[in-house]
Amino acid sequence: MDFGKLITESFNIAWNKKILWIFGALAGGVSGFGGIFNLISYIPSSLPFESPKDKALSTLNVLGANTASQDKQVWYKTASDVLLSPDLQVIILIILAALVVIFLFGLLAAFINNLANSALVYSIINLPEREPKFNEGLKAGLHFWFRYFKLNLIVISSYLTLIILLIGVPLIFFLLSLKIIGIIFAIISFLLFLLSTFILGIPVSIILLITQRIIIAKNSQVIDSLKEAVLLFKNNLGNSILAWLIIWALSFVYGFLTLFLTFIIGAPLVGIVIASFNTSVAAGITVIAVSAVIFMTIFILIGSVWSVFQSSFWTIFYTYLERR
Image 1: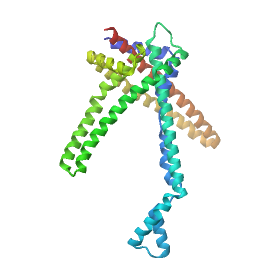
Image 2 (image 1 turned 45 degrees about the horizontal axis):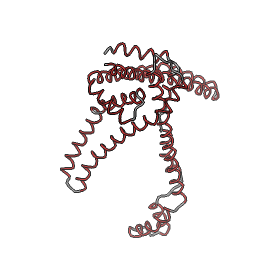
Image 3 (image 1 turned 60 degrees about the horizontal axis):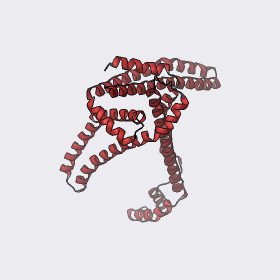
């Protein structure tokens, strides 16, 4: 397999088929729950909530009878009142609302990400017979996104099941007061976790990528595509691992260049912002807003090209495997 040609073809698609940048941006740009998680962590400290114990102690202090027994009695008396207090109810409602928002946002992110990835693969796999078009890619994405979603669910649920088993077995021995056996199994579980993450993780990721191509190329269902992907991987083990290593190395270079570009662009922008604030606050805020838009636009474009390149690389790699 000519990996040099594979990289060149992938780059040509990523650079010349600019309509695919839209799907590349959606495939690589839908992430980040930081703001919502920060909101949740901020809620308890931002509302005037007094814990049951503090309320009990404050009551006792007023009465001048703060003893250990009275402390316990007042704790139990006030616990039910506090659980029904408006403050706690507000906190629970806000947390539940935030969890619902996170869940819905996660579903939306999964939908957009799977739609964009399937649209990319569909558009690339039909080259050069058919030039990529946004409408056709969108239709394909709407058709295949749920199969991609089911594939991801299978992989995620498998990993979660493995993690639960690795944690559960040592925990059972600890609960049975068999600490030495529990420690031994905890060590074994930790080693198995490392094995599954760093060794089995590579084959699983490659099989996942090949399965995504088979789903679209042959319009097949998830399980059938997964079985065929496993066979393709086994029959082309060396080339598959080498392809993964090449992408890993290119990802490292991409990350380094992105970091370097961030410094090159960011340093002058910081200087301009500082200088503009010396002029006036309004000018500084305006420069920050304009700089943020320019900065985000540049890196979204770069990320889009990189997403299209990766999708092209694995799609062309899959077509090579099918020809053999």
